[in-house]
Image 1: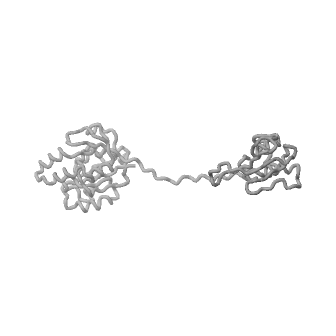
Image 2 (image 1 turned 180 degrees about the horizontal axis):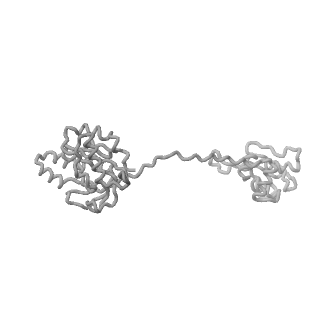
Image 3 (image 1 turned 120 degrees about the horizontal axis):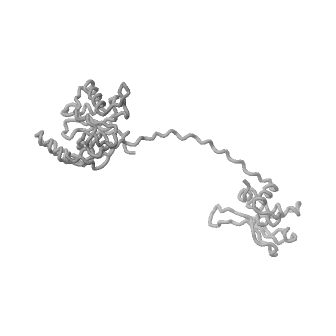
Length: 319
């Protein structure tokens, strides 16, 4: 579209408009001499061709080094009011607005700039959108408390386990040699999580949302802890979410991710118990490990100890 800015850019700030109009009556004369920003006093065709038209180039924003500029005029005889090149052309042609701009563009051979071809929109690079992490309930001690305190994620559990929260109680538990006293201390002092999902109360019938996680306990395997912490995260059959020492220090707790909506061969959905039995069979066959049967319950309460060397799968990190 033809506009003032385009015409100004093609006519040396509008001085070309004045010279074109002045040349109409004097085609063979030099009608304007420009020195710097001053164009001198010229004939004014709107004042009987008297030499009374002073033309100059004015900086519209003097405070700017690269200020836009426009040619202005003042008639010494006062025949026409002060104005700019477009005001002068409007009086000469008797036109205003777009018709005036189109007339100037035609006579000054100014063409509308070609439309730039918009670059084809490239499809956005495929972005990997991480699914939200699973969530499950967290309960404050003692174990008799069945109302959840809040909902957490695997990363939240990892921060708890590797942080200072359970350090003192874990260290104290491991000094107790009597198994009954140790069990009572653990039940009274350790917070728990139901990795199986979010619950209203800690019982299977009050499951609100399944997390598709399962925690497997391996008890009394002190000689195999280092070996299993190396092997289990690399097992191709299961995805490790968390792996950490049990509160007693002689066992492991392995939290794995489950396939949502897994089905049996006959197409019926697999229950938490079905999956637990399958995992237990696999572990017995391939590692000679006995999984604690408590893992069969989706509402299974898992004690959260202190383990600064816990293993966490960053894929399950908070988004």
